[in-house]
Image 1 (tube, rainbow, N blue to C red):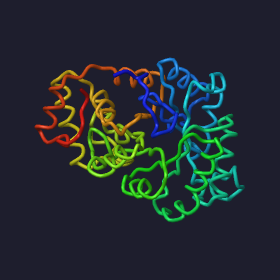
Image 2 (image 1 turned 30 degrees about the vertical axis):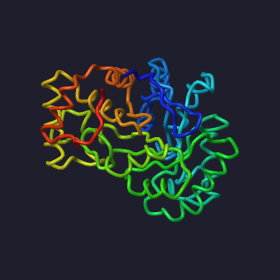
Image 3 (image 1 turned 180 degrees about the vertical axis):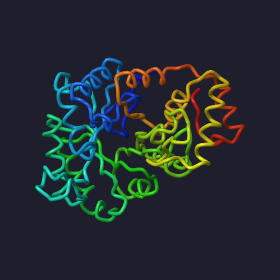
Image 4 (image 1 turned 60 degrees about the vertical axis):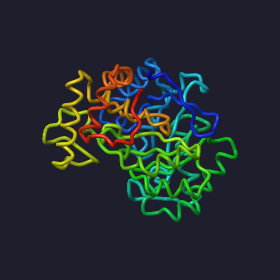
Length: 315
């Protein structure tokens, strides 16, 4: 497996590198020059898929992509961003942001994202976390995305969420191309395996895997402060992660390598998009994708009950 391997998004003409760059950490408290150097280095390592959202740093993640992407041939990379939250700077509101899944809100969000990114189109557009607004998203937000796709302003559409259940509903009811699913199909947790991923595979819908390290636990030293699902990991998850790491250690494989490569073994998954807070982390993610892993590691994880026995594993 190579970080530069490409996979098709749904039945569209888009292809993405199996390793992408998540844009959350680009908006951290660091000079913009550091973020731009990180993006440049990701491109140098072969990454051609870049994800972001207005919510990441209240627009700062999108703005930090602008400079590096403007120096590249437009046909040479894929960008995804999201709609569903309007920022104060876009609407003049009193709060930093608010949910808006109306047609007008989606179109306004899309327009301002293009301005921040410095682009005239977006390759993948996702409805962002419509957990408590599913019906409105189906009535208004997704039809607006379909319009943008028909106009050629967007190449593929879908939703980006931390749960698979609503994404499965959207997949069944709407003509979507892909989903960004964060944290629900990982080396630590495979809750999306039984229903969601088979439906996507059978219907030509691609899955982009966000949060491959389960918000940090699979990229940490696994001490008692490790994070899982955006909060301190519960004891049972920490124990499971430590048991998985012990198997990896016995086979001389970094936990991060197993985490990334496991996800990409599922045929419905087009890309995995770990975040990176430094150039070193960008380089490490690329190495982890390409680290050799013996088949015996996957067999031992399944035999120990640490991996769903039905989960595909790398050949």
